[in-house]
Amino acid sequence: MSGVNKNIVILISGSGSNMAAIVETSIQQRWQARLKARVVAVISNKAGAQGLAWAREQGIASHALDHTQFSSREAFDAALMVEIDRHAPTLVVLAGFMRILTPGFVQHYKGRLVNIHPSLLPAFTGLKTHQRAIDMGCRVAGATVHRVTSELDHGEILDQAVVPVLPGDTAETLAARVLTQEHVIYPRALERLLTA
Image (cartoon, rainbow, N blue to C red; front, side):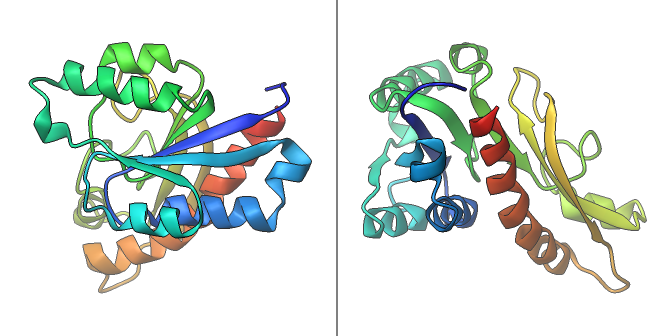
């Protein structure tokens, strides 16, 4: 991805721990100086998302667009695209953004839209991934960074991390261990995209 400035827009729905990991890594690794890349905006579909307050404290433009105020998924996605496009994004990064996106939205950002999913894709697409891995008797679980396509939790795999499933694990304990690895692989995958 060539160009002078590479703007990253991050979409969140909650605490934004992956967003924070990306921002902190971008500062520590000097992405702005080395890659001409920086996180320019954080947008949430929930006004009360904790991650928005954290982003504001870092001086990052932060916006809430309440999906419940729109008559349809398409109407929300259209408004979201307008908000995102104000920031001329090189990458649009889903970091705990709990909305299924319309095909039109995905097409609009084709090749620029990235997600992290808490399983070793292609296994366990969708929700309740950790409990499903435990119920199936998996010995390992993990997380996957992937390009977003119109098919849920599919698309080119960009990075993965493997985490052991331990005896006595609950969905919560496994999720906590996986999340620590998400914070490592997501910034790493984005840096690779930004230098490609």
